Every structure is written in C-alpha cells, then in structure tokens.
Length: 598
Ligand code: GDP
Ligand code: MG
Image 1 (cartoon, rainbow, N blue to C red):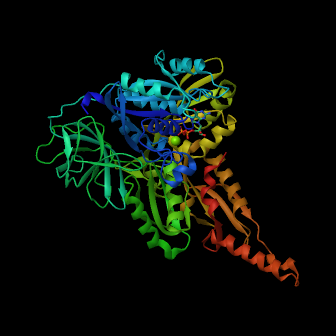
Image 2 (cartoon, rainbow, N blue to C red):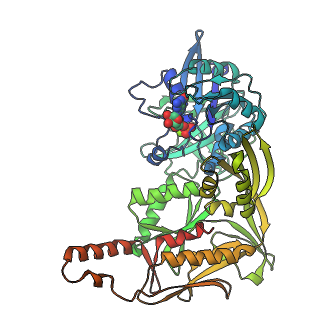
Image 3 (cartoon, rainbow, N blue to C red):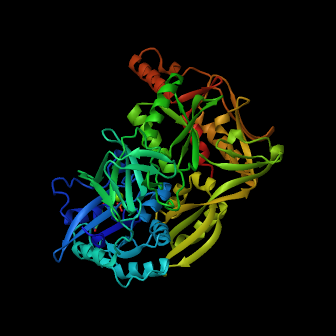
C-alpha cells in the first residue's frame, strides 16, 4: 500500500463517552475481527482495565479498508484513558496525523475531552468532531457541537453523528477518516527514524516496542540503535498490531506503525518517547519531546508480615519488567519495618500496582499515604528532592520548599460554581479561567498544588457537585510553598510513616483532624494511648484512646462456645491488618486517614 493511502488516527474522549465501543465498531466494520472474536471490547485487555473500564496500556490495530477499489491502511492508535499517563497519551498522539474527537450526545463536552484536545492541538492533529450515542433519547447533537466550538474553539461544521452501539453513521465516519485525515509525510529513503509510543513485556516474545516510523524503514534483522539509551539491538521480528493476532512482516516503512521484537528481558531499554534509528547509518536528530518516565507520587509499601520483604522485592521486580515508570528503593520505617519507597505516575497507577501486588503475588500490604515530590533548597545552598516527608531537613536548614503544581480543568453545571470556587480556594487553587459554555455549563481552569489533589480531591469534587463535574489535570512545574512537616506521635513516639507535609497556615486544623481520625481508628488497647500532632517539638493537637479495661470475651459468659470462638476469630482477622507500633496496634486505615482531613 502506498504511503498516501495510510491513515494514522486516535480516538479522544472523556471516560464513558464510547471510545472503546466505537473502536470495536470500526474494527468490525473493516472486517478485521469476526463477530465471534468480538467478545466485548477487544481494545481493553488487562483484567483491572476491564473491571474499571479504563485503558492503561495503549493498544493499536492495523486495518484494511477498500474504498472505490482503492486499498487503504487505517492504523487506529489507542491512547491511555487516564491523566496519570498523560505523557504516554502525548506520545500516542504524536504518532498520528488525526484524531476523532468523540463527545457523548447527551453528556456534552467534559474535562478530559478538553485536556486531550490540548495535547492533540500541540501535535498539529486534524480533529474530526464525532457526536456519539445519537440513539439516546436525551441526545442533543446541536448543543454538543456548539459546546465544542465554545469550549475549544474548533470549527465543528464538518462532523460525524454516530451511534457506536447500533453502528449508525460508522461507515460514513470511516469515509470521513480517509478523506479528511492527511496521509503521513516522511522520506522513505532517509535513515530509520521511529518513535516508541508504547512498550511492554510479552512472556513469549520478550520486550516489545510499538513504534511509528517517521522516516526510512525498520527491517527484520536490522541492527538498530535506541537514541536515548544509546543501546544497540537486533530486530528479531516485526509485526503489524492486532489485539487478537498480530501479523508478521519483514519491514515497517515510513508512515506505518508496528511491533518491534527485540528479545530483551525488560522494557527498560524501550522507553516510551525514545527514538529508534539505524545503528550504522543513524538519523541526525532524535524525535523531540523525550522525557524518561518520571514518578510524581510516592508511597511506602510494606508487607504486613515482615518475612515477606524479599517476596515483595521479587514482585516489584517482575512488575518493573513491564513498566519502566515504576520505581522503588528499599526503605525502613521505625513504625513499619522494611519496605519500599515506591514511585508512581499518579494515584491510579499507584492503586493498580498495589492491587496487582496483592492479587497476582498474594501479598498483604500496608501502603502509607501518597506524597508528591518536593524540592528543597537548603540554607547551605544544596538542593535536594524529597520523596518522603520524614526526609525533610530541620526547619532552620530549609531556605525554600518547592512543590509541584498542576493545571486543573473542571467542567461543571453552573449551580455548583459557588461551592467549587470555595473548595478550590480551600485547596490553594489559583483561578486562571472561568467560561460559560452555555447557560448551564461552566469551564474552570485552576493552577493548584498537586499535594492538594492527592489529598482526596476527586471524591470531594464529586460530592460537592453531586457527581456532575468532571476533572482532569496536567503537571505544570514547581512553585515555592509555605510548608511545614507535621509529625504524629503515638504513645510519645513519632511514627515516621504518618508524617505529612502541610501548608503552615493549615497545620493546626489538619493536625486536629488527623488526631481526631486516629482516635477513632486505633482500637482500645490494654492501656491508655496518647495521640499527638506536632511541628518539631511543638505539640499542636492531642487526644487519647482510652484503655479497654476488660477482656472482650468476658461478656460471653461460659456457655456459648461457638460465639466465643467466632469472636476470637474475628479478633484474629482484625489483627492481620494491624501493624504493631511499639506496643500499640495500629490498623492499616490509619496510614491513609491523612487523605481525608477536611
Ligand atoms: P469509553 O470509556 O470511552 O471507552 O466508553 P465505552 O466504549 O466503554 O462506553 C461507555 C458506555 O456507553 C458503555 O456502557 C457503552 O455500552 C455505552 N455506549 C457506547 N456507545 C454508545 C452509543 O452509541 N449509544 C448508547 N446508547 N450507548 C453507548
Ligand atoms: Mg474504554
């Protein structure tokens, strides 16, 4: 197929607007998958992805399409559906010439629609507005189209109206893709230049890179060089992507996408955003915008049973084979023993990793509250990065603490604007923009410390707006903050894994709230337990957990032995999720309590 008959495109959508359903429908329409194989949603593969209905790893599929006797190749390039993976979204979009901008005909434009469109515009993509779910009684395509023009300022005169559910409008949409999305440019005779936009580990094939070739071609047997890491490897095999059955090929040429099989044992050398070129005849310049995966959120992960530390290390190493953005280092906590300080791209990434460690490796874990990365300029001029609040230097050694900020995009029905402004002010947000999309819906943009988003922001946003607001964010760099470390003492001892970094003017309220929560969470012990919050040696809040006094089984009298046994079993089960801090049993929930302090 000649280069001018190739179309590379992605689908951009807010969650639940129908991206996966439409992708499946397009795949089916092109006849790449039989109806029987079309078990719901070919494009989402991992179990956790299916359960949560989100896409974490991008999938792609190469489709054949015949129009007026002309053979076209349509490469549908999937993008991860969550903000944690925004860099990977940007690399997937950089591999395309166009994108379908899907909006739910009943819901209208949402925050993720806008955030993704910004990335698409940065990558000069041709955007095709697609209004989906026109079969719904509440569908209002005209309103949606005017929102697109208002919110994003794109021209929506030419658009598609489809139902991914019934298939209505989908053949016309495919024609539109062929007509409107430009063919890939690039010189097939130039040295190899390809962008890695996804990579993963396959048990049979080893590390795989999913690439878009921009110049020249990649051939089977070729010695390639990965420009960021400067490593050289041989191409063992090449395949065109297909979620059910990849098709082998001997070369992938300019404008095409494909899977490169290297036989490597980990994906570390095949980082998303890196450029592949020819080892002997390299291209002059790598494709711009490469950033090695950088964790934004850190948490301590500890096995509940201390002898499981090595098992946890093995499990993390196994997950790392397939996820170069996961980072971990051994750490020991006085309270929790030996574990790992683990770095994640964001909150969802963290949840997914923790869940996989527990599910796939059978580990019982305690995770400390997540924290963002802080940069600290010390009075002696040294600059350090803090991934754990307990590492913060003494106050007199600190010149400035810098904290990461994000740009938050929020879309809300107008009746919640007042409450949202209050919430955002409370979270130290700075208003950048507030636009009415129409009489009923408002677009708000705020710069806000990422720390405030890690702290239970999403749930708060949902409850403030009865679930009607949508939210997305993008990191925008570090800014100075007036911050202090708040320590928690249990029975007089500082519990290092409970320390948090908070804005100075909120230290007292947060300290009171934290102590109050811990009082509820820590069960009564045989003795009274004092719980205090302090800044340095200055105690700012305190509370006591009263002693339990009597044995809990005492009131079961003699007779009812089964009831007694049940109670003991229940106690034992409860204990499993506890961690002993000194003599005090502290439940897992206590370590996350800090996330709900207002
Ligand atoms: P994604 O999160 O963007 O991938 O959205 P999905 O494809 O998973 O779709 C979300 C929900 O909307 C699912 O329950 C789909 O069955 C439903 N859906 C998708 N497209 C349509 C459509 O055209 N009409 C109707 N009525 N429902 C749809
Ligand atoms: Mg989906």
